Length: 64
Length: 168
Length: 398
Image (cartoon, chains in turn blue, orange, cyan):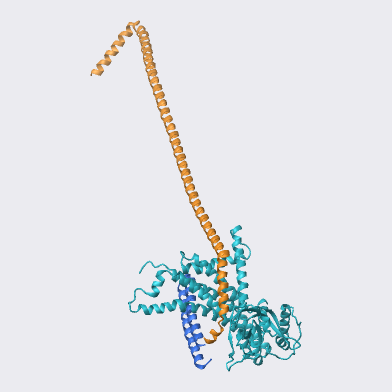
């Protein structure tokens, strides 16, 4: 792995981390506000997190 | 990416495609179709059983309500019957009382009337008796008095004197 | 206790029985006793017997960071023989415990089949097998056909073979064995569950465990994402894929060393199945929205069509296949790297410390991996259902 590759991978991880943090945080807020909707919020959260993860992995592998 | 493409094994891909296709077809035929059908059947069975139970419960409730109504009606009827009976009893007692009173009054009246008429009769008899008695006495007295001349004169005198006194 | 023994069994992946014996011999007597007890309780009947340590180091030793890395990368790849572990006996000779698998190739001279034992566990192209007039060598888990006049493989600086090319390899590899075993197991489990319904309303035994899972996939994944009207004809596929991925993910965590869902070919195949299913079941609204998006200016529509088409045909399956592959590979790498702490950090932390640290960390990561095994199966099935649902959705407006 070359230096630009590593920097790129770091950037991807930062971006994905921020994104996952926002998703998780918002989901927590939503659950705190409406505990009865926990299941629906969790499902939606997992789907969005999975989509983001796919994007991040795709970028990581393209750089590898 | 290059390394990944290098690692990608077309042979494994082909084998996996064939196996997965076979697995899906076999699973659908021998597992999923019967399982899902029986699950559906069972769920429908449970649903219909629940519906039937609900219906039965409703019917039962209706029946119970009917029973309740009947019971209520019966009770009301009994109540009215009892009331009527009571009223009748009262009325009978009342009637009997009135009748008895009337009868009593009548009897009393009759008795009174009888007493009255008896009394009258007794009175008139007594009067007659007294009159006869007084007449007898008077006859006796007069007979006695008139046997003696002096005494007759004296009486006349006395009566006369009394008369004058009252006139004065 | 069970988990510790599980992790200890994982250790066997490192193929170095002698070495483990040696560290336990030198380390904290309590741990040594424990490990020895576990190993002797778990050990197979070895052909060489329990020849003790103090032997010379050979290629089987996994000690330095580079060796660990090479070992992990080797494990992540598919292999042509089913080896559970190997060790070096007192004569300094490698003994492999496992069994060979058939190799089936489509070479330039036609179809060839033989057992992988003919390569004698060689993986760097030094053993050359001649079959049907073609010379074959195995280099890093791939079978290469040598050029006609070449007698041995020559490599360039990047360790790429210069006088050999890959052949189309449809061997029964370790992954194929895994797929076959799990496929047969699933067929057995679920068809016996299906048979149970013929005689009774509620299944008994293991069927009672499987039934809620089937209902879970149907009610939580298929129905809400595809819709109550169409879900039925896709549920079979979704159930198959869900259990296939989940069970293979879990099997990947056992010391058998399967890495089926961590093979790009396998995940690509799964993703392409999903792609084919949602592409062929897409209704005219779905394709209408891809090619000629209503409600946007006409000039933008062709541009959108390209983006939408790329999204539907490339990005969706690509994200599906890469997610599963990457998660499972990453899980295997992490678990094995944590087990390798035992070797790589033993100089800094002493043998006992490194072993304890490695046990602790790999224990927790393995627990997380059990969760990930389920989560990835769930997400793959969920997203497949979602994509199918988008394709068959009824639009009553516009």
